[in-house]
Image 1: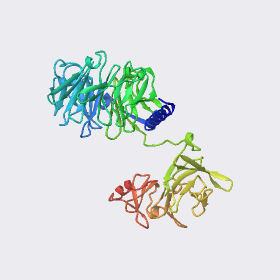
Image 2 (image 1 turned 90 degrees about the vertical axis):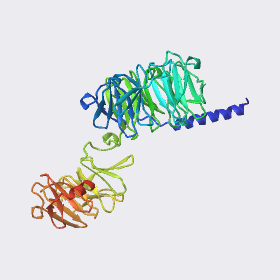
Image 3 (image 1 turned 90 degrees about the horizontal axis):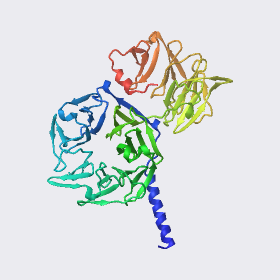
Length: 505
């Protein structure tokens, strides 16, 4: 091979590797996730959750030590039967809606409509422990045993054992890739199924034991004693991450790829880890012994643990902003969005903050040489916001076009306000320190009190109904509606739906 050809092959390999790594998302931080747990006090029949499945109807099936339960998100409905007392190693749903379970000992069990039926494996494999189940698109059933894999399609049965390179000392593992190809591993063996036979695949490095894991893109994942690899479409293994020994193939009880392309590892003693292009990160759970992993159709990860119950893990749908991200003070009393979608924050003594994408800008409320804290913010109909400061500050206008907040002397500066809203018509409403309600229309400011229907206890919050009516919630727990001239009790309760659909600030 000449030098030019070697160089071109090297460039091609680098591009292939770089492309595969680019498709592997960065590893998120553990703090990017929220975790919800269920235990015995929540109705979970056992703290040992062995297997998980989401059926076509959306129910979660939980195989515990000694029971099989259906979970609807609130209640566990437990199915009691002698067969349910087995320890199930695998669980899947058949085309007819029945559940197929693989027990620790004995033959597979089919569950449907409250009934359990044994479905023996062919001899000489009957009553052997089953470590994994797989049903492929052609209807073939695959059973993973120690040192053996069995494929059953109708009356056709085929087993692969020692003659194929499997060792009795290792559980066999089953996986599929993007193309639907079935992959098998056991000990140091990796093979794919092609037209009735196994094709062995050779890999470099420490392959004393490896585990194959299903993938949605490209080839399957491979877990070795010290690395996580990914097979590309061309069959070349690319290293995704180095892993510590207790995350290696021998210590993994459960593994799956989520919809983001991240690999999750549930280990027998080192807890739960998520792996992306930046290596493994541990996500804390109630137990360090993870037995089962499942991602539901909504993207939530469900985790079954030994002596740790059931957990649901989801990515946070929010970002927490505080001093560490750019706010000047820790207190936030009011938040609103302007017409551009920027978020504005009343940050107390820290003044006004605007959050635009990941950037935070800050302004102080000032009249002359006096600084004021920021208490309330609300959208301005012409862009930017209204802002209210502390005692004596009054109302300010803030926008991109203004270098600093401008005080408006129309509204008396002695009023201390606790609630404020900008209506769709552009009016600014606010509560005052003497338990009245102020209304700013352009340059006209009006005040409404007891004579105009405002309760003696004062108004606590505002909302605008779907039909454009102003609603006011009082400190006495009543709801008032502004009829154009005064506030009247919403005795019919018709405005409540509008308040829910409206925007409260």
